[in-house]
Length: 173
Image (cartoon, rainbow, N blue to C red; front, side, top):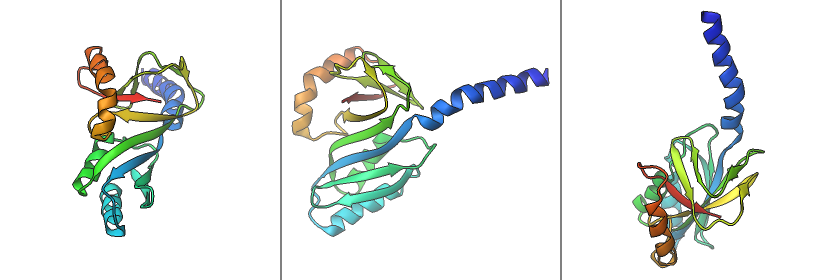
């Protein structure tokens, strides 16, 4: 009996561990409203570095954005990233994240579950997503007010067809 259980555990690890290890969010780029000086930039950087899934942060004061590189095999909360920017005293203009599907493909007409989150695609024309894909997050936490106005209709329609009762993220390419 123990051999049977051990064999099944090894089988599942061999099948699913490569998917988990290879397919993951690698980095994100955040536009930040209100950065005016190096102290502002440093405040945001320190707030983001405190997150346990963040490996490093590269700030660019000239373009009011930063690149975040994630630690491998850690759960990434995009809500916590947006909140860290707000806690530093600024607002998020946009949030884009690169996901590496690494040979796996998914349909863009459906919802996609990864780790503990559900991602619902908006306004996607591409039937399959493969390789490294830049996902743009849609929502009040991830876009400026003016940009949210552009997505208001599509977002309200998508909320009627929500994939997960616990919420999730709305994304587009």
